[in-house]
View (cartoon, one colour):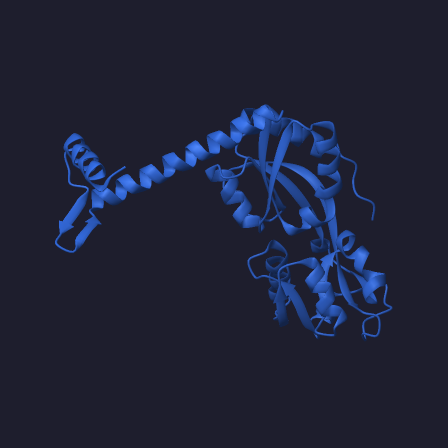
Amino acid sequence: MSIGAASKRIVDLESAVGVPLLERHSRGVKLTLAGRALQQHAQRILGDIEQMGADLSDYARGIIGVVRLWANTSATTQFLPPDLARFVQANNGIRIELEERNSSEIVHAVLDGRADIGIFADRTPLLGIQTLNYRHDRLVLVLPKRHPLAGRRAIDFEQALEFEFVSLSADTSLAQRLQGVAETLGRRMRLRIRVRSFDAMCQMVAAGLGVAVLPATAVQPYLQSMGLEQVAIQGDWVHRQLLIGAKDFNAVARPVRVLVEHLLASPPAPG
């Protein structure tokens, strides 16, 4: 399209909507506020068209539904890999879009429709969404085999607070839980370093940068290979429930319902 033809279309559009879309100067043009609003709407429309094409392409390939699943690190590390593998094998017409986020982000995503369902830790503010129990995990202390606390069957968390910690990011449910327990004891955690994954936490512990608290199931693959040891922590707070959340389970699309039913029926992971 020539510059002249494009200019005429813009003038015609301005006439149709009744407001100027461009500020015209001798050096060029720039968008008015109305022009910026039109640009945002146009970008959304183009995005919707692109998504429509992707969705129709899915149908052409036999995909009959998409489930947007957000889950926290504990779920994606410990439980979802085998559960989703079995689901995809039995339901190859349903595509899973999985995003790993912290628990509070997941609840907000479910609430505002960015996620169909979410998996997150208990004690996360629910903001009115519905929940079902998914899995249970137990937190343990992870440390090098030559650490002063190594070899014990169980310890009080207050004993661990004498040492420096490797932790997940401050906005994760696990980090917030540990901070809360320390505060109830009138203590503060001595944080040496924060990382974003269980694997990185174990590597930092193996390097001698501190101790860590992790789900018992998640740490099993690292114990022997990294020379680590786990010690039980006393207290009810170490037992966590992972929840599946949705705005309304009765109103979810069929592919979402099929996935939820599968997750609830899946056998617990060993350990």
